[in-house]
Length: 279
Image 1 (cartoon, rainbow, N blue to C red):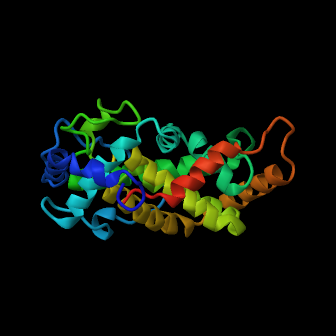
Image 2 (tube, rainbow, N blue to C red):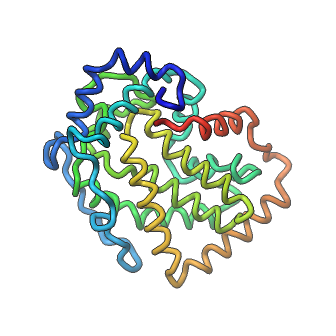
């Protein structure tokens, strides 16, 4: 599949019609996706965050190399249905800060149990509340349809309903995953490489799922990096991060007896996923 998956050439050869339709969908102009309206949200507490409508590049227009690459990757990754990578993408698709935090356990080197990390979970929840309105504005700006909006191909989650009517660019999951990785890297700097690798894989799971184009995810990574940099400069952030750092160190050094180490099989899945990026 591309360079990462061995069956990609045969699959691509049999999906020219699908790829062509995907390219068309990927380049539909703003205002063309059905049924989505921007939901007004109250201004989040804290200083205004950087406006991604300014610093993010626009998604690839129709009939460009970037749009064709997005469509090809979407088509190629459909053959992963029911594979181990598919199952990892399904785990990564679970909603909630607690699930996202736990997903970084292998990368951290010990089990991150939200019940033992209330300060960290609260910090991530506040950051999510800060960035969600920003992401909604960004999505409304480009109003890009999801890859599966007009084409029935396998998805790793049942998201063809309301989510299908929400814009695709940039990926909120990739944005929040990158922010989570950045927080954990500040807390566990010796594990930065492993943690940010997991943040990458977490975003790529959205491509494997078929709910985002590849360029939605790369934009999400940029989005997360810029928004985290801004929030990290705020007055209360250092205090909140210190509280989270203390409880993470306590959990690492004194794990409760009932907390088991990260599952080796799941860790192996994550390592394999990191070596086979969808491209």
